[in-house]
Amino acid sequence: MKINRLIPIIVSSLIITIALNAQAQNAGDPVRGIQDLVNVRGRDGEGILQKRGYRFRWAEKSDDSTYSFWTQTKTGRCISVRTEQGRYVSLVDTGTTADCDRGDRKRPQNTGNSSSRPLPDLVGARAGQAEGELRRRGYTYRRNEKVSNTSVASFWVEGNSGKCVEIVTSNGRYQNIFYVDWHHCHR
Image (tube, rainbow, N blue to C red; front, side, top):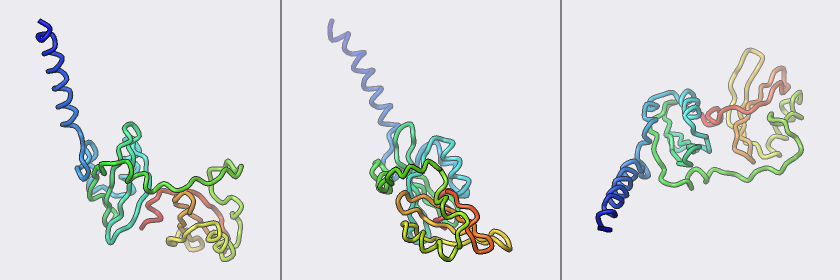
């Protein structure tokens, strides 16, 4: 009689185990629920991933591709997004959170500046002199982009966080400095 009571419990446990294993993802498997982003422009895909609960972690360039790593905030699952020629080519499970954690850098010490804008002390500085100061502070130059006939935007990677910083220069002076999405520094 006791065996008859255990059979439904065992069967239920097996069904649950099979269902969970069917939903499990392995490293390299396409991530379910976001494959509609294949062939989407990278800048558009980034916003969509964020709206769907993913948080950008870091990115690296390799030959003609850029690989970005994202964490799903609900589950902690790490995914890799491969971008070629500005479009998403694949979105796959990495199989481990270590791939997303690899891009973490040491956090900067609290300087007492609660501003969310980087480098407020350099707004108004002469561009030529301020570039040396940026390098001294650990920023790495990536590229320039003409904004208008009198303005240029330069993109720098912040060394302690890996964030992308845009600096708008006009008439030889830094006019505006702010954080922008990672892909601006990885073109």
